Length: 372
Ligand SMILES: *Cc1c(COP(=O)(O)O)cnc(C)c1O
Image (cartoon, rainbow, N blue to C red; front, side, top):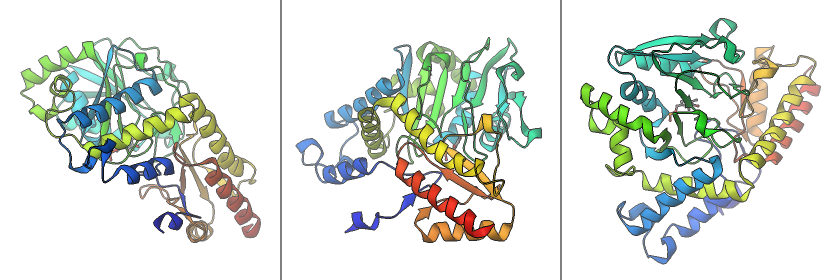
């Protein structure tokens, strides 16, 4: 019954977002009893052998997908990407030190502000704020000072709808990336980063778990800094790493879903296949903009467009309002732009099928013909 309700519903929510239907069905099937053990994942000990296996599946799935080298650890933390905004500077900027932040949108601003809020020195390594965040800077515009602890970037700007498409950095200091809204959407060279973090609820699972991929040889330094600063235990990466993400009770069900999503993504052909699919979906939606003679106005410069979140405006606010209402009535959900910017945002993460974007494209073309 409930599965039938999903027919004709196209989930473009920005996060929490669509999950693969195969994953939901599997979770439903296994809900009362995991692996024949007679217990639900919801009610088992995080120290049990069954959960050991679940967490290993999630870690190994991400390792295989992203090609994470042995130099890096995979942690499952809580507090969302937003807590990482504080944990990264607290653990890695030593007393008297600083770090550089590349400002490309609201989330990167929040990361930058949080570093300052916890009393550490954050510098702007580059910013496209004056351009209304409509573009991503080139690496040649990114400043790096030898005494910075790291440079922080946001690989996909979920709200404005821009994304880095030239990811090979040329920096002399460690690189840290917030990949919350595009992790696992395309291949990435993990070895280029000292630390990657992502709230799971966009591309790799449900809300409640944050994936952190961190270079092991950086953790010793973090431990010293955390000790000197008397950081609370839960804010220390070194503690979470030593305890294999089980210093306290981890969000076991969320980690289980990350395992299922990672395995589903591998079955789809891994990240090269995801990239091809995501490109196809983005081409459908941006094609509607580019062939609309200015009816749909893309927010971001073409070279910086996100394949995950496409944003656009319709010049007449009444028509834009009608667009969102009609879309909703036709089953296209989650299309309203972020409350801070308005307009329309099409979030098309990994689990959004090509068919959903094809249907939305048809609707967009039809709507334009009827309203110009
Ligand atoms: C959604 C998002 C966040 C916030 O994540 P929470 O898990 O809600 O804290 C941070 N950064 C980016 C790029 C995001 O898309």
